[in-house]
Image (cartoon, rainbow, N blue to C red; front, side):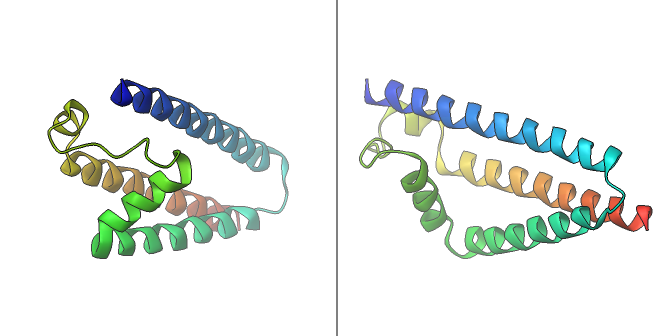
Length: 123
């Protein structure tokens, strides 16, 4: 039951992240189409790039701490820790989350480079 509850919490967090992502895409398109000043793309790109570098360093040197901080931020205390023999841990081992984090950060890095590229093209 605790594992199912956590998966429901994960669904809420992921749906929230997806909603924020789509709003940011719409905002980016609006700025791209309607703003004469494209410096916002450069600033946004550099900001995302800096955050990504920090997260990559944290993930590289202390993934467990980054993982724990992420969960502490988005989930209630005690609702996201499970014994090593739980089905949830068996289905989603630590390597799954390391790979997922890498993919998210690489996608984010590409996005930041696109934003900087838009700025450079628009100059």
